[in-house]
Amino acid sequence: MIKRILVILLLCLLTINVLGTDCEHEDIIYNPETGKAELWLVDCSHEKISLLDADYQERAASIVRSIEGPNTQLSLPESMASYNQELYVINGIGKRITVFNETDSGNVPPKRILEGAATEINDSFGIVVINNEIYISNVTALGVGQILVFNSTDNGNIAPKRKIEGANTLVQNPRQMFASGTELLITDYSNRIIVHNLNASGNVAPNRNLFGANTLIDTPEGIMVVNGEIFVSNRKGNFISVFNLNDTGNVAPKRRIAGANTLLNEPTGLASDGTEMHIANFMSDNLLKFPLNASGNVAPTGVGGEGIGLLGPKFIILLNARTDLIGESSKFGLTAQALEGSVELTWQNCPDLDIAGFNVYRQQDNGDWEKINAELIPCSGGIQGSGYIQWDREAELSNYDYAYKLEYVYPDGGRCWDIPVVLE
Image (cartoon, rainbow, N blue to C red; front, side, top):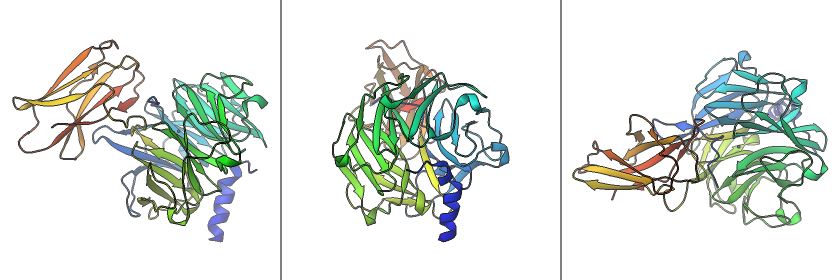
């Protein structure tokens, strides 16, 4: 136990100054052949990032593949983001951002590296990539923090295009971040949750912040927004707190996951597929899974990673398991009805979304999701009322039950799920 603590303190905590709704498609990837979420884990002490099976239950977990080795230039990775089929990784000791393809495996060199004096990257902990921009939480000295913003394709010793910094910003010791709509939510070791506009620049005041004794915030680390709620992992407090997205000031959380039964032991990264949450449990070297509505001293519904040698898991992302798509009905009014032995699928445009087109997926008897269109169905221009029809003539209606859902694809390649519908 002493050896383990020393390893983590020396390898990971050296990078810490002690005292990643609309579809933000930067941080989500999935297997389009199965339609199932894929979970990427930042394994800090082993200096690797790994793709895991997200369906772990009762201590079972498996590594699908890892990016690791000297060629990767991974150096105590802290957190990561996904955007346009690329993985962006913050390296704590190396003071660099390394970029890989989502399909990379093994001892591969990064396709781009962002590092050097001009970047100002120092002690960096959180990263968000959205709207062709990289947001990095950075600490320059004790109690002095900033958010650095770069173009998503920047490479080498490039200066940030803008910064959020100064006393008015309240950014002192920023950790992880999450983009929600037009806003950037930041956890800060000053025991605050700070909310800025994504386009903020300079010494500007935040839109709002959560701070004060009633919030119970205690060294906040991970953060995510799901269904209008903010989820925060409180690392030293060993609990998860939940607030409403628009909460501000010294308000109490609406609920917490806390207590011995939860097994929480310095929780760090958070991720969700819209129905449950995954938590990187740093000091227990495992992953925990809870329902999104969990509250109180409850046991996790899944514990994973204990048999695969994790050491200091810091951050996780679920790829293309969208957190904003859980609701009562389809964004696009998708309908499925049986007609003369086939299935007619119809839907409408959603003019609020700038998308390139659609794919249609079918599920047979709760199995894997299968794409039924050969090519992307192009968007007809975002006009309200523009309609689409797709026929599924391969469904065996007399033998199986079926569900359908749309995948909508952004011009930059980002992909999001719509709400599934069941064929009655």
